[in-house]
Image (cartoon, rainbow, N blue to C red; front, side, top):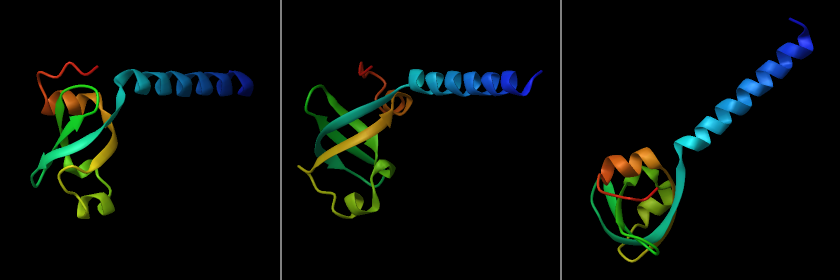
Length: 91
């Protein structure tokens, strides 16, 4: 295989992997904190139902200052949303 063909194949592979990663799905979720415990936050979305999201998604600064009514915007893997909110139709 020529070097240029190898590079094309490598670039095509990277492109396909990147496309598949997008297909998995990352969703931007924004809303206000309704309640929280040690591991999860209940986020009341601006558009849609309340969602339970892992507290580990927060930055250290946001976690220290977390309080009910606080506005948050998070990028969450759809698999995480489905795992914590089995009846969620948020796709």
